[in-house]
Amino acid sequence: MPRARLRFIFLNAGHFLDHFFMLIFATVAALRLIEEWGMSYAALIPYATPGFIAFGVGAIPAGWLADKWSREGMIVIFFLGIGASSILAALAGSPIEIALGLTAIGLFAAIYHPVGLALVIQGREKTGVPLAVNGIFGNLGVACAALLTGYFIDTAGWRNAFVLPGAISIGLGVAYAAFLWSGRGSGAAGRGAADGGAAKTAPAVGGPPPVERGTLVRVLAIIMFTTAIGGLIFQSTTFALPKIFDERLTELAGSATAIGGYAFTVFTVAAFAQLAVGYLVDHHSLRTVFAFVAALQAAFFAVMYQLTGLAALVVAVGFMLVVFGQIPINDVLIGRITKSEWRSRVYSLRYIVTFSVSASTLPLIAWIHGSWGFDRLFVVMAVAAAGILAAVLLLPRRGAFIERAAAPA
Image (tube, rainbow, N blue to C red; front, top):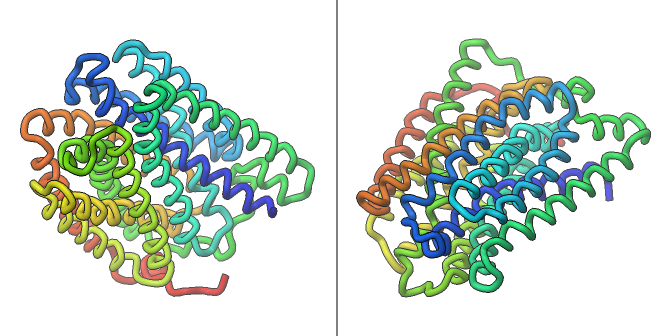
């Protein structure tokens, strides 16, 4: 197998695990710890907040180290560190102890997005589909977190939901380090793969098109705004969906495994929206695709208000399709307007915004659920999606980074 393809497989596995680890607690808290530790859902989920803060804040130093030292080396640290942290979280006997474990998970999870995504698009002319494929693996991690955690809760205990993935991640870290070591001394390609730093990597063919300073500032501002609001929506849907199904699918799901199975089905189906959106932004106006996705989000969240049973399940598939579908759009836009040597730092800025907002979302979910239930949450998300649509309409209508026609590979 070509080394570039094998590296892409490792990067996809990393994205899978990154989201998997960050959402194990969402199912554990909703379906087990509220009983085992005698706490309400609203009281328990804020203990995940420090982990999501670390997930966001850690992106800045991770991106800086990757650009200055080694992107590949940072991915090895990611695999080993997040695996060990997950095993640590399994030892928790109190909310404070599990918060410490989740914080460690978040700190190492922060490495992936600014570093892994820069590696995914490194040297590529068309970036939409590779980012979408990589994004699908991330979303499958979200899906499997609900499914496997629910299964472990019913069969082997919630602690095993942390231990086994942790051991697998450590094994992947060792394998990836061996893969990098085997490429040393094999010529320019091997050195480039091993070093991973932007300064040691030849620029991508063609490079990003030149963008006027004023337009660049405008586009980056829109990216950061839609990133912040998108982080609110993504975190609200992915973290709360198991609990939403626990409350609204009472006639369809009677166990933790069943609830996790429904969440897995919704997340898995929705994950492939990224592939369609990745193709569309490579061949059509990014602005048009982005606006269409944002409009659908607002519509689905508004419809979800007070739905239960099968109708709620169907609409949940709809809103997760467009929530996941939005993910690669900003990443593609960053790839088109930034140079390789500072791209990891721009990605780190994007993801510190995403996951900092995500961290603040958890207390918001707890407050809304404790005061009004999830109906009010869907109203908030519908308004937020409308805000994304308004911002997208401010993007330039023309420009090589907006209008991207199909080009020869």
